[in-house]
Length: 548
Image (cartoon, rainbow, N blue to C red; front, top):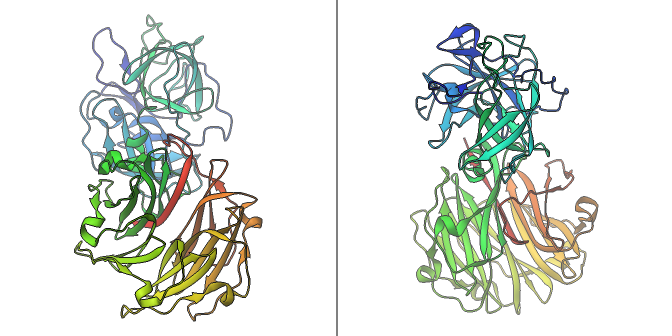
């Protein structure tokens, strides 16, 4: 393992050098615990070899992918001398990871912790085909058996060519570390530093840092101790996910209401998800949240939240992960009584917000300078359609499209590039098909087309249709063959990289996600992991974001 600079009679870090002892370290071949077995082929694909400074005189360690772009390992692997602080940014020495047998990728950025021997290392290109390691949300109990994996030396091999594992028993659990006792002759050797420590479920609970190395090759024969120290990772979900959210490419920012607050998570380019973090803890309390809308714009994510007392608030999550403070939209755009829902879309750098209040549809714009127009009653321009219960928006070719539900039926209007509204059109008549009473609606603009998804019959059925750029409509298609039989509590759609992504919260407290590709095929739905939510998921909103 790797760790801070050892002191007399203290454990030593278990770094490694490629072919010779250098500065008291040794290189990383496949990591292995003393007399531990070879890992089963394909069992630990997220465990990687790490080389810092070159194959001849460099330092070898082990690491674990947390997703396709980031490796979690020991910070001491990159220290000029073990124990020295590691600066954030580009590594001082060329550093590469090896995935599988031959694939190597350079590390371009380091994000170290200041409170423990731990660093996130960003890969120059995503590790295609490799999935991130599962992470535990709690520390192991004292006395629990744990598995360590690494590419370090063994009792007889200087630079092994295989990943090895060993079994250890958890001892004292500290604030940032946990102690380990090797079972039998299992021990962590040089090159195992940075390797993962896993619980019985195969979830990451720690990163290995220091070891007595009793019995390892080139260790004093008088040293027989096999104890070790690992740094805890179970309490670092938000820190890890904050960096994961910076991965390059198209992502899907997601807001889910749960309990008394709103929680934000991100679907990453590799299809994995971050955990969900409390928005009010970042942007300030608004007295609880019951629903929201989100819009990705210029790398940022705009969040609109309806508070439990019916207020409307706005904040921005910046591309770097920092949040602005919730601002009172009513204080800027005028107060609406009996606010029931909000939806939004962007046209260029203008944020268009549509709210349903007192059974009517209202519209406002926040321009690129952050200034709000006053709410206007859309009925004044598009005509009345009766009591409105829900609405959805989409941006297509510089136009704002709006679908509103009145009397369980869908009606459509658009605001053209000149700011003029068309009259409401009967969507059921336009698509040539009817459904049961509509309880929820969502829209997404893909190119010049507006894709619409509805939930009907109290959420028990879901349908999809498209308003083409030429103004024609496709019939409603039943989504049961795509997502199965579900009862929808809330639905959300977003255009991500030209494709339609769709998410639904269900009556059995799941969140399902799928993608409709440009060739009109749908992915099988996946169940979104809801780590971080305190209670069942309620309303959901999704939007595309892009990071270069």
